[in-house]
Length: 203
Image 1: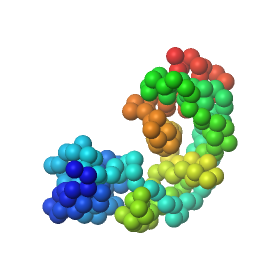
Image 2: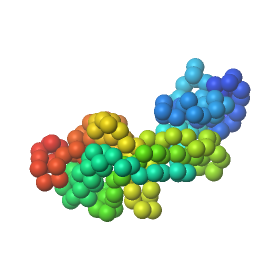
Image 3: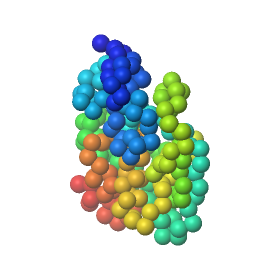
Image 4: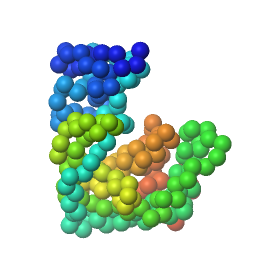
């Protein structure tokens, strides 16, 4: 059943691996409907046929990332960075993963000790498939993770809650196979003070 032709949003048949399941609503308006799964088709069946997830499988290539000068958003990012770098947060994240996935051993998140969180005024990205096929170019993004530099870029907002949601989502994406379906516990430990109450809020 892998890679059989399936219907896209334009009522055209394409190989399943060239059709995207539109599970990232913030990108749908920027992607030609030729790439998207027909709205009346089952995403589960499309996945079995070989379709990729717009949310999980698409690759972002940054074209323009400009750091923000907003002192308030920079202050929030600095606080979250200090939390991510702390052993308390890493231990708390390991506990979340352990309980959610029922693991027998801990996952190594020590790379977070040197991670940075930076507010950005502008984030433009190209979206490509794993085989390097370009899906959309220079579209506005709300976050980006530079894996080489270990930097989380978040689009600046007057709302602290919105920026926290962005950071929670992008960290969850980096968890890969250990990602969480329910993000509130993760957001809670990200937003906790590194030395005050982190253990209590996980329990």
